[in-house]
Structure formats: C-alpha cells, structure tokens
Length: 155
Image (cartoon, rainbow, N blue to C red; front, side, top):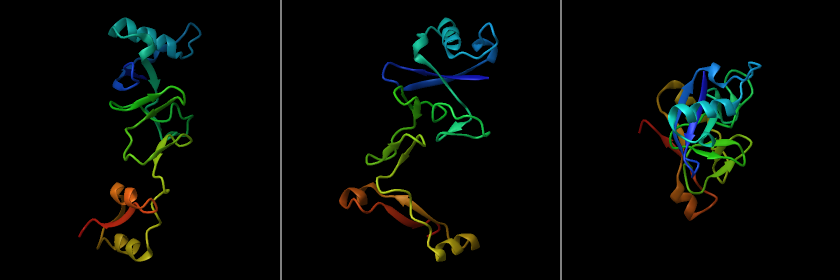
C-alpha cells in the first residue's frame, strides 16, 4: 500500500490516505509519487501538488524494517510538511525545543534527559517506584541550564 498525506497551502497535514500500489506504478512497474498524486487529484478533488507521499515505516528518520527511511516521519493529522528538508514534523512539543534535521525529531535546547541515577533505576527495576525525566518549560525559561526534572510516577 502507498500512503499519501493531504496537505493545505500552509503545509499542514489534513489527512492521510492509503491507495493500492498499482495506482502509483509507471509503465515500467516502478513506483512514482507523481502518478499517485495525479490519481489522488482525480479521485479526491484536491490538487496533485498537495498530496505528499509518506512512509508508514519511518519514524525519526529510521525505517522500522531496516529499509531506507523516507521523509523523516510518517505523516499524521496535525503534522507539518517541511518541503526544504523533505520531512514531516510533529507539532513542536515546547517553545524552546529545536528541530534536529538528522533525526527528524525535536530536541530540548540542553540535550537529552540525563542518565537515570542508579538508585532510581534499581527502584524502577524492582517496581517499587516509577522514575522518569519530564521536561519543565517554565524551569528552562527561568534558567536556561535547567529543564529536565526527575519525577516519581508512583508518588
């Protein structure tokens, strides 16, 4: 099956449709996005250039079946199409987070969450606690060296 995102003129994903692979094949039986776009325009009354092919198996620029990642992420309603970088982006999770083009994901401005302290990791393993890191945008805005907070989910 071939998947296509229907976008508007602001590059917002409005819906994602699945069509039969035969509807995207050229005369040499090679898949061509343009053929799928023309098929979708004909059958959905939406301009061909506003249908963008997406890969169901791609997330954060990794193909889950060890194939070639395609367009960064599988498109979902509410995502945005970035034509310059050929990536579908989820909504920005926090105002301070930045795009990482290489991983097609949003990153905190101070990096990934720190490693779990050994004591908390052991408590998670024993299932006596549920420790995890959570992003605190207010803390970051107050002090741009802060942001990740260790939380006990069972407290």
